[in-house]
Amino acid sequence: MNDELFNLIERLANLLRQETRAEGLSLGLQPVQQEALYYLSTCNRYSDTTLAVTEFLGLTKGTVSQSLKVLESKKLIVREKDKSDKRITHLKVTEVGNIFLAETCPPKKFTEAVTQLSGKDQSNTATLLSEILRNYQRTAGRNAFGVCRNCKFNQKSSEGIVCGLTQEPLSTEDTMLICREYCT
Amino acid sequence: MNDELFNLIERLANLLRQETRAEGLSLGLQPVQQEALYYLSTCNRYSDTTLAVTEFLGLTKGTVSQSLKVLESKKLIVREKDKSDKRITHLKVTEVGNIFLAETCPPKKFTEAVTQLSGKDQSNTATLLSEILRNYQRTAGRNAFGVCRNCKFNQKSSEGIVCGLTQEPLSTEDTMLICREYCT
DNA sequence: CAAATATGTTTTGACTCGATACTATTAAGC
DNA sequence: GCTTAATAGTATCGAGTCAAAACATATTTG
Image 1 (cartoon, rainbow over the protein chains, first blue to last red):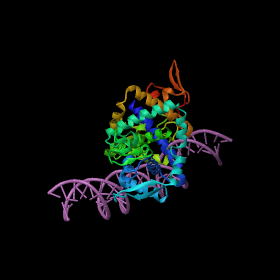
Image 2: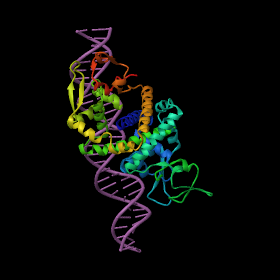
Image 3: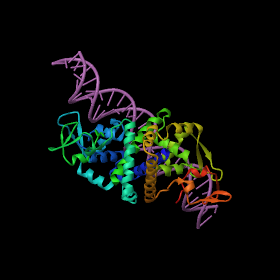
Image 4: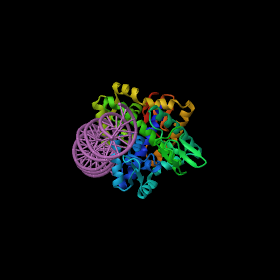
Protein backbone atom coordinates (compact mmCIF):
# COMPACT_ATOMS: atom_id res chain seq x y z
CA MET A 1 0.00 0.00 0.00
CA ASN A 2 2.88 2.41 0.80
CA ASP A 3 4.43 1.34 -2.44
CA GLU A 4 1.26 2.08 -4.33
CA LEU A 5 0.82 5.55 -2.89
CA PHE A 6 4.50 6.31 -3.45
CA ASN A 7 4.17 5.19 -7.02
CA LEU A 8 1.02 7.21 -7.68
CA ILE A 9 2.43 10.43 -6.27
CA GLU A 10 5.68 10.06 -8.19
CA ARG A 11 3.84 9.43 -11.43
CA LEU A 12 1.43 12.30 -11.01
CA ALA A 13 4.37 14.53 -10.19
CA ASN A 14 6.21 13.37 -13.30
CA LEU A 15 3.25 14.18 -15.50
CA LEU A 16 2.81 17.56 -13.83
CA ARG A 17 6.48 18.31 -14.32
CA GLN A 18 6.24 17.40 -17.97
CA GLU A 19 3.22 19.62 -18.56
CA THR A 20 4.78 22.43 -16.53
CA ARG A 21 7.90 22.21 -18.67
CA ALA A 22 5.81 22.51 -21.82
CA GLU A 23 3.78 25.45 -20.46
CA GLY A 24 6.90 27.31 -19.38
CA LEU A 25 8.51 27.02 -22.80
CA SER A 26 7.03 30.29 -24.06
CA LEU A 27 8.84 32.30 -21.39
CA GLY A 28 11.82 30.00 -21.13
CA LEU A 29 10.87 29.10 -17.57
CA GLN A 30 12.04 25.88 -15.94
CA PRO A 31 9.61 23.83 -13.81
CA VAL A 32 11.36 24.74 -10.58
CA GLN A 33 11.19 28.43 -11.42
CA GLN A 34 7.47 28.17 -12.02
CA GLU A 35 7.06 26.39 -8.70
CA ALA A 36 8.85 29.22 -6.93
CA LEU A 37 6.73 31.81 -8.72
CA TYR A 38 3.54 29.97 -7.84
CA TYR A 39 4.57 29.72 -4.20
CA LEU A 40 5.32 33.45 -4.05
CA SER A 41 1.83 34.16 -5.37
CA THR A 42 0.24 32.21 -2.52
CA CYS A 43 2.32 33.20 0.52
CA ASN A 44 2.06 36.03 3.04
CA ARG A 45 4.48 38.80 3.94
CA TYR A 46 6.37 36.68 6.45
CA SER A 47 7.02 34.04 3.83
CA ASP A 48 8.05 35.84 0.64
CA THR A 49 11.82 35.65 1.11
CA THR A 50 14.59 33.60 -0.45
CA LEU A 51 14.85 31.44 2.63
CA ALA A 52 11.13 30.72 2.77
CA VAL A 53 11.14 29.61 -0.87
CA THR A 54 14.19 27.48 -0.10
CA GLU A 55 12.41 25.79 2.76
CA PHE A 56 9.22 25.34 0.76
CA LEU A 57 10.94 23.74 -2.23
CA GLY A 58 13.37 21.73 -0.11
CA LEU A 59 16.45 22.99 -1.94
CA THR A 60 19.52 24.94 -0.84
CA LYS A 61 19.50 28.72 -0.71
CA GLY A 62 22.23 29.12 -3.31
CA THR A 63 20.20 27.18 -5.83
CA VAL A 64 17.03 29.10 -5.08
CA SER A 65 18.86 32.41 -5.29
CA GLN A 66 19.73 31.55 -8.90
CA SER A 67 16.14 30.66 -9.82
CA LEU A 68 14.88 33.90 -8.28
CA LYS A 69 17.42 35.88 -10.25
CA VAL A 70 15.92 34.44 -13.44
CA LEU A 71 12.37 35.28 -12.33
CA GLU A 72 13.49 38.84 -11.60
CA SER A 73 15.28 39.22 -14.94
CA LYS A 74 12.07 38.20 -16.70
CA LYS A 75 10.12 40.81 -14.71
CA LEU A 76 7.92 38.19 -13.08
CA ILE A 77 8.90 39.27 -9.57
CA VAL A 78 10.38 42.39 -7.97
CA ARG A 79 12.53 42.68 -4.86
CA GLU A 80 11.62 44.99 -1.98
CA LYS A 81 14.00 45.65 0.89
CA ASP A 82 12.53 45.07 4.32
CA LYS A 83 12.08 48.26 6.33
CA SER A 84 13.19 47.03 9.73
CA ASP A 85 15.70 44.30 8.87
CA LYS A 86 18.10 45.24 6.10
CA ARG A 87 19.18 41.63 5.52
CA ILE A 88 15.74 40.65 4.28
CA THR A 89 14.33 41.22 0.78
CA HIS A 90 10.69 40.55 0.04
CA LEU A 91 9.77 39.02 -3.31
CA LYS A 92 6.58 40.28 -4.92
CA VAL A 93 4.92 38.76 -7.98
CA THR A 94 4.32 41.38 -10.69
CA GLU A 95 1.23 41.80 -12.85
CA VAL A 96 3.00 39.93 -15.66
CA GLY A 97 3.81 37.13 -13.26
CA ASN A 98 0.22 36.81 -12.13
CA ILE A 99 -1.07 36.72 -15.69
CA PHE A 100 1.37 33.95 -16.54
CA LEU A 101 0.35 31.96 -13.47
CA ALA A 102 -3.34 32.34 -14.17
CA GLU A 103 -2.81 30.79 -17.59
CA THR A 104 -0.51 27.96 -16.61
CA CYS A 105 -0.82 27.04 -12.96
CA PRO A 106 -2.23 24.50 -12.24
CA PRO A 107 -1.66 22.96 -15.69
CA LYS A 108 -4.81 22.71 -17.80
CA LYS A 109 -4.79 18.97 -18.42
CA PHE A 110 -4.32 18.31 -14.74
CA THR A 111 -7.31 20.47 -13.90
CA GLU A 112 -9.29 18.66 -16.54
CA ALA A 113 -8.35 15.29 -15.04
CA VAL A 114 -9.30 16.38 -11.54
CA THR A 115 -12.65 17.87 -12.50
CA GLN A 116 -13.70 14.49 -13.83
CA LEU A 117 -14.00 13.45 -10.19
CA SER A 118 -17.04 14.41 -8.13
CA GLY A 119 -16.70 17.41 -5.85
CA LYS A 120 -16.87 15.15 -2.87
CA ASP A 121 -14.12 12.89 -4.18
CA GLN A 122 -11.97 15.93 -4.89
CA SER A 123 -12.29 17.29 -1.38
CA ASN A 124 -11.75 13.84 0.13
CA THR A 125 -8.54 13.45 -1.83
CA ALA A 126 -7.36 16.85 -0.67
CA THR A 127 -8.13 16.02 2.95
CA LEU A 128 -6.31 12.71 2.82
CA LEU A 129 -3.28 14.11 1.04
CA SER A 130 -3.13 17.02 3.50
CA GLU A 131 -2.92 14.57 6.33
CA ILE A 132 -0.13 12.59 4.69
CA LEU A 133 1.75 15.80 3.91
CA ARG A 134 1.36 17.05 7.48
CA ASN A 135 2.61 13.73 8.88
CA TYR A 136 5.47 13.66 6.41
CA GLN A 137 6.56 17.20 7.19
CA ARG A 138 6.49 16.46 10.91
CA THR A 139 8.51 13.26 10.49
CA ALA A 140 11.00 15.02 8.24
CA GLY A 141 11.26 17.94 10.68
CA ARG A 142 10.03 20.60 8.28
CA ASN A 143 7.79 23.59 8.65
CA ALA A 144 4.21 22.88 7.75
CA PHE A 145 3.52 25.93 5.52
CA GLY A 146 -0.20 26.20 6.14
CA VAL A 147 -2.82 28.86 5.58
CA CYS A 148 -2.56 31.68 8.16
CA ARG A 149 -6.24 31.47 9.10
CA ASN A 150 -5.80 27.94 10.50
CA CYS A 151 -2.61 28.66 12.44
CA LYS A 152 -2.54 28.43 16.22
CA PHE A 153 -0.88 31.85 16.38
CA ASN A 154 -3.80 33.45 14.58
CA GLN A 155 -5.72 35.45 17.20
CA LYS A 156 -9.14 36.93 16.57
CA SER A 157 -10.08 39.75 18.94
CA SER A 158 -12.62 42.58 18.94
CA GLU A 159 -10.05 44.90 17.29
CA GLY A 160 -9.39 42.50 14.46
CA ILE A 161 -7.01 39.66 13.71
CA VAL A 162 -3.48 39.57 15.06
CA CYS A 163 -0.49 37.25 14.53
CA GLY A 164 0.53 35.91 17.95
CA LEU A 165 4.13 35.54 16.83
CA THR A 166 4.77 39.03 15.48
CA GLN A 167 1.91 40.85 17.27
CA GLU A 168 1.08 42.53 13.96
CA PRO A 169 -2.48 43.11 12.76
CA LEU A 170 -3.66 40.99 9.83
CA SER A 171 -6.25 41.71 7.16
CA THR A 172 -8.79 39.13 6.04
CA GLU A 173 -6.81 38.69 2.81
CA ASP A 174 -3.64 38.15 4.84
CA THR A 175 -5.17 35.24 6.67
CA MET A 176 -5.91 33.38 3.46
CA LEU A 177 -2.26 33.21 2.41
CA ILE A 178 0.35 30.58 3.18
CA CYS A 179 2.71 31.21 6.09
CA ARG A 180 5.98 29.42 6.74
CA GLU A 181 5.47 29.75 10.50
CA TYR A 182 2.19 27.86 10.32
CA CYS A 183 1.60 25.72 13.38
CA THR A 184 -1.31 23.54 14.51
CA MET B 1 -9.83 22.81 -5.22
CA ASN B 2 -7.70 22.05 -8.31
CA ASP B 3 -5.19 24.45 -6.89
CA GLU B 4 -5.18 22.68 -3.59
CA LEU B 5 -4.65 19.22 -5.08
CA PHE B 6 -1.98 20.56 -7.40
CA ASN B 7 -0.22 22.13 -4.46
CA LEU B 8 -0.42 19.02 -2.29
CA ILE B 9 0.96 16.71 -4.96
CA GLU B 10 3.80 19.09 -5.78
CA ARG B 11 4.75 19.43 -2.14
CA LEU B 12 4.62 15.72 -1.44
CA ALA B 13 6.72 15.12 -4.52
CA ASN B 14 9.26 17.73 -3.40
CA LEU B 15 9.63 16.09 -0.02
CA LEU B 16 9.93 12.65 -1.64
CA ARG B 17 12.57 13.97 -4.00
CA GLN B 18 14.49 15.44 -1.12
CA GLU B 19 14.45 12.22 0.88
CA THR B 20 15.27 10.18 -2.22
CA ARG B 21 18.26 12.40 -2.85
CA ALA B 22 19.49 11.83 0.68
CA GLU B 23 18.98 8.06 0.51
CA GLY B 24 20.80 7.80 -2.81
CA LEU B 25 23.84 9.64 -1.52
CA SER B 26 25.60 6.45 -0.36
CA LEU B 27 25.70 5.08 -3.90
CA GLY B 28 25.92 8.44 -5.61
CA LEU B 29 22.52 7.92 -7.22
CA GLN B 30 20.38 10.81 -8.40
CA PRO B 31 16.62 10.82 -7.73
CA VAL B 32 15.76 10.21 -11.37
CA GLN B 33 18.10 7.23 -11.51
CA GLN B 34 16.43 5.72 -8.47
CA GLU B 35 13.04 6.24 -10.07
CA ALA B 36 14.16 4.36 -13.15
CA LEU B 37 15.60 1.55 -11.04
CA TYR B 38 12.41 1.30 -9.02
CA TYR B 39 10.30 1.18 -12.15
CA LEU B 40 12.44 -1.60 -13.60
CA SER B 41 11.91 -3.63 -10.45
CA THR B 42 8.14 -3.43 -10.86
CA CYS B 43 7.61 -3.95 -14.59
CA ASN B 44 7.16 -7.03 -16.75
CA ARG B 45 9.19 -8.34 -19.68
CA TYR B 46 7.37 -6.21 -22.24
CA SER B 47 8.18 -3.06 -20.32
CA ASP B 48 11.83 -3.31 -19.23
CA THR B 49 13.37 -1.39 -22.13
CA THR B 50 14.86 2.08 -22.54
CA LEU B 51 11.77 3.29 -24.36
CA ALA B 52 9.39 2.01 -21.72
CA VAL B 53 11.37 3.79 -18.99
CA THR B 54 11.35 6.90 -21.16
CA GLU B 55 7.60 6.77 -21.50
CA PHE B 56 7.09 6.03 -17.82
CA LEU B 57 9.25 8.91 -16.60
CA GLY B 58 8.06 11.30 -19.29
CA LEU B 59 11.56 12.21 -20.46
CA THR B 60 13.35 11.84 -23.79
CA LYS B 61 15.13 8.62 -24.68
CA GLY B 62 18.55 10.25 -24.90
CA THR B 63 18.27 11.48 -21.33
CA VAL B 64 17.07 8.13 -20.05
CA SER B 65 19.85 6.32 -21.89
CA GLN B 66 22.34 8.31 -19.82
CA SER B 67 20.67 7.46 -16.52
CA LEU B 68 20.59 3.77 -17.42
CA LYS B 69 24.28 3.83 -18.27
CA VAL B 70 24.96 5.02 -14.74
CA LEU B 71 22.79 2.29 -13.22
CA GLU B 72 24.64 -0.30 -15.28
CA SER B 73 28.07 1.04 -14.33
CA LYS B 74 27.10 0.71 -10.68
CA LYS B 75 26.04 -2.92 -11.25
CA LEU B 76 22.43 -2.19 -10.28
CA ILE B 77 21.05 -3.42 -13.59
CA VAL B 78 22.29 -5.68 -16.40
CA ARG B 79 21.41 -5.55 -20.09
CA GLU B 80 20.10 -8.60 -21.92
CA LYS B 81 19.68 -8.63 -25.69
CA ASP B 82 16.24 -9.66 -26.88
CA LYS B 83 16.22 -13.04 -28.63
CA SER B 84 13.82 -12.23 -31.45
CA ASP B 85 14.34 -8.48 -31.99
CA LYS B 86 17.97 -7.42 -31.95
CA ARG B 87 17.13 -3.73 -31.56
CA ILE B 88 15.73 -4.34 -28.09
CA THR B 89 17.70 -4.70 -24.86
CA HIS B 90 15.98 -5.81 -21.68
CA LEU B 91 17.06 -4.21 -18.41
CA LYS B 92 17.14 -6.49 -15.38
CA VAL B 93 17.62 -5.32 -11.80
CA THR B 94 20.50 -7.19 -10.12
CA GLU B 95 20.58 -8.60 -6.60
CA VAL B 96 22.51 -5.52 -5.48
CA GLY B 97 19.88 -3.33 -7.07
CA ASN B 98 17.05 -5.09 -5.29
CA ILE B 99 18.78 -4.85 -1.93
CA PHE B 100 19.27 -1.12 -2.43
CA LEU B 101 15.61 -0.67 -3.38
CA ALA B 102 14.37 -2.67 -0.41
CA GLU B 103 16.23 -0.32 1.90
CA THR B 104 15.34 2.96 0.27
CA CYS B 105 12.20 2.75 -1.83
CA PRO B 106 9.67 3.96 -0.79
CA PRO B 107 11.58 6.31 1.52
CA LYS B 108 11.26 5.43 5.21
CA LYS B 109 9.82 8.71 6.47
CA PHE B 110 7.20 8.67 3.75
CA THR B 111 6.12 5.17 4.75
CA GLU B 112 5.99 6.30 8.35
CA ALA B 113 3.78 9.25 7.41
CA VAL B 114 1.40 7.07 5.41
CA THR B 115 1.05 4.37 8.04
CA GLN B 116 -0.27 7.00 10.45
CA LEU B 117 -3.45 6.87 8.38
CA SER B 118 -5.99 4.10 8.85
CA GLY B 119 -5.87 1.23 6.37
CA LYS B 120 -9.16 2.37 4.93
CA ASP B 121 -7.93 5.93 4.45
CA GLN B 122 -4.81 4.62 2.76
CA SER B 123 -6.71 2.53 0.26
CA ASN B 124 -9.19 5.33 -0.37
CA THR B 125 -6.35 7.72 -1.14
CA ALA B 126 -4.84 5.20 -3.52
CA THR B 127 -8.15 4.68 -5.29
CA LEU B 128 -8.76 8.40 -5.73
CA LEU B 129 -5.24 9.14 -6.91
CA SER B 130 -5.40 6.23 -9.35
CA GLU B 131 -8.46 7.73 -10.89
CA ILE B 132 -6.86 11.16 -11.23
CA LEU B 133 -3.73 9.59 -12.71
CA ARG B 134 -5.76 7.54 -15.19
CA ASN B 135 -7.73 10.61 -16.26
CA TYR B 136 -4.58 12.67 -16.51
CA GLN B 137 -2.77 10.07 -18.60
CA ARG B 138 -5.71 9.80 -20.94
CA THR B 139 -5.97 13.58 -21.34
CA ALA B 140 -2.23 13.85 -21.89
CA GLY B 141 -2.32 10.97 -24.37
CA ARG B 142 0.00 8.66 -22.44
CA ASN B 143 0.05 4.97 -21.82
CA ALA B 144 -1.58 3.98 -18.56
CA PHE B 145 1.13 1.63 -17.24
CA GLY B 146 -1.11 -0.63 -15.16
CA VAL B 147 -0.73 -4.02 -13.54
CA CYS B 148 -0.95 -6.85 -16.10
CA ARG B 149 -3.63 -8.72 -14.12
CA ASN B 150 -6.13 -5.89 -14.63
CA CYS B 151 -5.43 -5.37 -18.33
CA LYS B 152 -8.12 -6.01 -20.93
CA PHE B 153 -5.65 -8.10 -22.92
CA ASN B 154 -5.14 -10.46 -20.01
CA GLN B 155 -6.92 -13.70 -20.91
CA LYS B 156 -7.54 -16.46 -18.41
CA SER B 157 -8.26 -19.86 -19.97
CA SER B 158 -8.17 -23.49 -18.83
CA GLU B 159 -4.55 -23.80 -20.02
CA GLY B 160 -3.44 -20.77 -17.99
CA ILE B 161 -3.10 -17.04 -18.51
CA VAL B 162 -2.21 -15.55 -21.89
CA CYS B 163 -1.46 -12.02 -23.10
CA GLY B 164 -3.94 -11.19 -25.85
CA LEU B 165 -1.50 -8.81 -27.50
CA THR B 166 1.52 -11.09 -27.79
CA GLN B 167 -0.28 -14.44 -27.44
CA GLU B 168 2.39 -15.50 -24.96
CA PRO B 169 1.66 -17.46 -21.78
CA LEU B 170 1.99 -15.58 -18.49
CA SER B 171 2.85 -16.84 -15.02
CA THR B 172 0.99 -15.66 -11.93
CA GLU B 173 4.04 -13.55 -11.00
CA ASP B 174 4.02 -12.04 -14.49
CA THR B 175 0.49 -10.78 -14.04
CA MET B 176 1.38 -8.83 -10.92
CA LEU B 177 3.92 -6.64 -12.71
CA ILE B 178 3.44 -3.32 -14.46
CA CYS B 179 2.98 -3.36 -18.24
CA ARG B 180 3.34 -0.40 -20.59
CA GLU B 181 0.66 -1.82 -22.88
CA TYR B 182 -1.87 -1.81 -20.05
CA CYS B 183 -5.36 -1.03 -21.27
CA THR B 184 -8.73 -0.89 -19.53
C1' DC C 1 15.14 -4.83 -52.14
C1' DA C 2 14.53 0.13 -51.12
C1' DA C 3 12.22 3.31 -48.06
C1' DA C 4 10.15 4.05 -43.87
C1' DT C 5 9.92 2.96 -39.07
C1' DA C 6 11.54 1.54 -34.47
C1' DT C 7 15.09 0.93 -30.71
C1' DG C 8 18.78 2.78 -28.76
C1' DT C 9 23.35 5.63 -28.10
C1' DT C 10 26.17 9.81 -28.36
C1' DT C 11 27.01 14.66 -28.37
C1' DT C 12 26.08 19.43 -27.40
C1' DG C 13 24.52 23.35 -24.88
C1' DA C 14 21.44 25.37 -21.42
C1' DC C 15 20.10 24.68 -16.88
C1' DT C 16 19.77 22.45 -11.88
C1' DC C 17 21.67 21.41 -7.76
C1' DG C 18 24.60 20.98 -3.49
C1' DA C 19 28.67 22.58 -1.50
C1' DT C 20 31.55 26.08 -0.35
C1' DA C 21 33.05 30.55 0.27
C1' DC C 22 31.76 35.13 0.72
C1' DT C 23 29.29 39.82 2.16
C1' DA C 24 26.24 42.34 5.03
C1' DT C 25 23.26 42.83 8.88
C1' DT C 26 21.40 41.64 13.36
C1' DA C 27 21.44 39.29 17.84
C1' DA C 28 23.86 37.43 21.91
C1' DG C 29 27.40 37.06 25.33
C1' DC C 30 30.39 39.11 28.38
C1' DG D 1 30.16 48.76 24.16
C1' DC D 2 32.62 45.34 21.75
C1' DT D 3 33.42 40.90 20.21
C1' DT D 4 31.36 36.71 18.62
C1' DA D 5 27.79 34.08 16.75
C1' DA D 6 23.84 33.66 14.00
C1' DT D 7 20.88 34.98 10.02
C1' DA D 8 19.70 36.47 5.11
C1' DG D 9 21.37 36.43 0.98
C1' DT D 10 24.71 36.15 -3.27
C1' DA D 11 28.51 34.15 -6.24
C1' DT D 12 31.19 30.44 -7.99
C1' DC D 13 32.25 25.67 -9.13
C1' DG D 14 31.78 20.99 -10.61
C1' DA D 15 28.78 17.06 -11.27
C1' DG D 16 24.73 15.93 -13.22
C1' DT D 17 19.85 16.58 -15.81
C1' DC D 18 17.54 17.51 -19.74
C1' DA D 19 15.89 18.22 -24.70
C1' DA D 20 17.28 18.25 -29.27
C1' DA D 21 19.61 16.56 -32.90
C1' DA D 22 22.53 13.43 -35.26
C1' DC D 23 23.68 8.89 -35.68
C1' DA D 24 23.88 3.58 -35.91
C1' DT D 25 21.29 -0.83 -36.26
C1' DA D 26 17.62 -3.63 -36.96
C1' DT D 27 12.95 -4.48 -38.52
C1' DT D 28 8.83 -3.70 -41.18
C1' DT D 29 6.38 -2.05 -45.22
C1' DG D 30 5.54 -1.38 -49.86
